[in-house]
Image 1 (cartoon, rainbow, N blue to C red):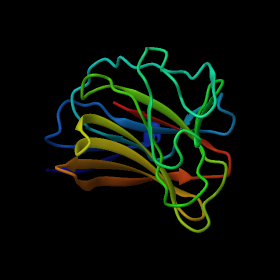
Image 2: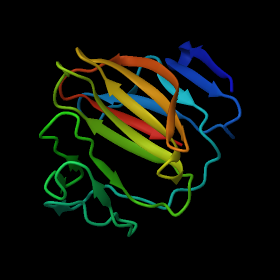
Image 3: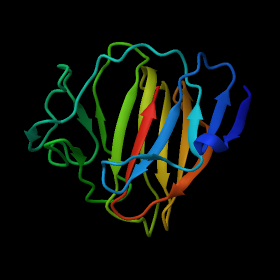
Length: 196
């Protein structure tokens, strides 16, 4: 497998090409301080992750749910895992929330697309700048099962340095294909991750 980084100064991003993974869908990272105006992050990332099929899941979280996420607008049931289920999970008019009361307690919300490929757009807001350990979120895609998938991971390091990582898991062995610095996080920033 060959990984190639190409700086695209015109679009202020780094294109990440990974040979042998399929057609050319990619990951981009954008940042907003007000969730209205979005800008590509300098050195925003792109990576080949496989053929794209139209997604059948849509959820803008236009509802209020306490202790759970309920159903997506397109009908799928959200499955919740990690932390205290359902207490750590809420929906509040436009936002699906994970509440983390302790470090090193992963939370996961998932809904089946019924196929391994799809397009995902996630806005991730972190109210703090990490001080003791990194904070991360990821989008899992091209999932065959829980042991075989690709994921785009946004990792905010201690002090705010932020990177996008592309991870491939085969037979439950995860390999980081690439990691690209995408900027510096400030408390309350929202990051938008597109994974296709």
